[in-house]
Length: 461
Image (cartoon, rainbow, N blue to C red; front, side, top):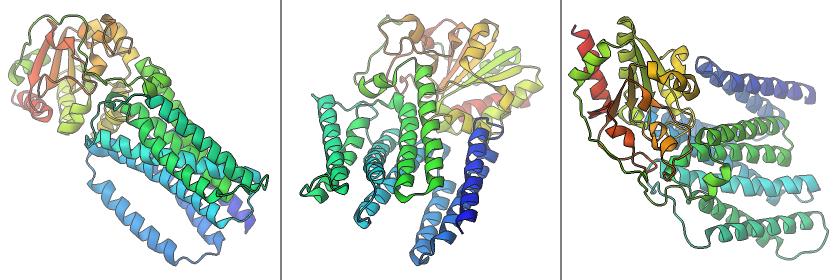
């Protein structure tokens, strides 16, 4: 029994690694998701068969969980995917916290390493759970996207963290019979409560514009909590899966921070966006609207078009219309590329997922450093709902909160079409001087409607 279970766990671990590697490319991401799911299926089935358990409640849980997950996955809109990912992270953290708590209640005399892992499982899982719920609220705009700050906030967080450490030491010391400490059950309850409060206080001071980084970090937390839970229940495949998620989440967090030219500490503690701040330099020029018909004539004469998608494309569900416009342009002899900024949208890879759903070729996707050096050769840059990732204040205005963040430098293109519903600033609340540049034309209205009108103009020729 032990041999085949170990082999099953090895197979599952290999499938996890292969699936994770495939997720690194848009053209293999779907296959990677299936491979990873197969690995989890192997791990779950092997664990259940080897457990000698009463399957009654397990089957009930599987049916209820699968039913909720299946309905939610089918009904969720692409604009809600960031919120769903946040809930996934929170669910993982909650599951790990419950496993750690159950093992603490059930286990009479755990080993020292198990006791430490138990404390870490509860602490990290609790922070991940409530932090993810707050992130969900900010992403879905149930909670303000502005940072929520109060006097002495960092001191309070530090104090709570010290309490959590003291409670953990208290619990481990009692488990190891180092001393007969009283009220250890109260210490454990306090650890759970402090972890849940820390999760809330850690995320509320982070602005909506930084949510992609927070989602990646919380994803890492959920993996670390799962790995710690694996040590608690002595399950090797859970340790492997949790470690993979934790490591990949930390790497992605670092990539996102680099893309914004900010440290993780700055993201977590700066309160970015707590005050809506316009660019320090005075914005000059006037808004120059353009109609879809006039935009068509410029596109028809172009030879190089760069599309920069943002959250506005997701809101309008315009990705399929954008793909159709891309096909029309390509048929007209135009080179079309899609510039994806790492923090575009509300979660890591948000725009990549949308474009993959519309079957945009992976070869058409480019990163900012690929297109910025030759931006002057781009005839038309079409910005669809993006704002902060194309804001020239990030490279020109030292007083701007965005200053220093690498952007897609569409302001250097020959012509820029900005598709927006209104002149409202982006999620960060920072005004964008791109809108009044001489080479910029504003195409106001619903992005899907505007793009569909452009497609119709090409088809009518």
